[in-house]
Image 1 (cartoon, one colour):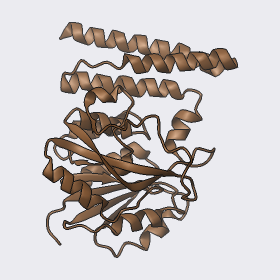
Image 2 (cartoon, helix red, strand yellow; image 1 turned 90 degrees about the horizontal axis):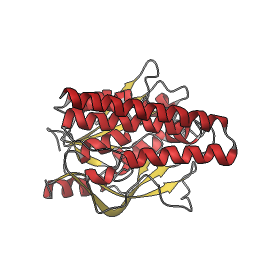
Image 3 (cartoon, helix red, strand yellow; image 1 turned 90 degrees about the vertical axis):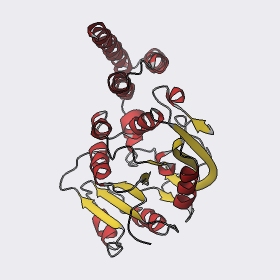
Image 4 (cartoon, one colour; image 1 turned 180 degrees about the horizontal axis):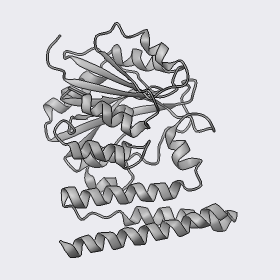
Length: 308
């Protein structure tokens, strides 16, 4: 193999000393008929993640970008996307891993055969910090559909977990899309990418189980989703702000008048219910701020429509 890069594998890592070797092994052991590169962005890890990565640096497919200061997951991702040379993008974070050495080959074969699809996902296994499968094997924000389109997104849903995603490199000639990835939220970009992909085409779901997502939800476990949405009493407000920014992008850049009011309403009702049931002052304050945010967004969109 040699020459043109078919796939760029994006690996974000931060304090993944315990797991990064398994992640890199699983990616570098892929058996493919095409060249691929692995772009690792170490976001100024405070542990020995960088030392663990250095053991792999003799592999010419590996390109390591060590950040001098923590820039946040989304900016780290955007920087790697700008460097990606592949026709396709795949992802595996430093605490997750792939389990099928033919994962990339299978997904690229599918996308080459069916050009009408922008990307494809597959089944995964949820594991704990020790790699033991969880009893519950489902994620509420994943839509398990054979074909995922923009109307399935609804402001929140993903076609599959990012560790399962392979998609055409839509960022190669679209700087505004890369900028959106890093601007919506400092750490969370999965929803942004799912929306961008679905706005450009269909996403298929393959039946093969070919990767593991390490879901660690306890305090200090390291999952950014947990810290941003589960542990934070204002997580629903963060959710609302992300939703507003994504909807605004669809209207401004794509001319699509799609709204995610159903998701906004659920966010508000859940926060209000928590305030009432548990007497949570933070939840009540969050409700007030969410209402103000929603009203301000509606007013902004109305003014833009009136000017256009």
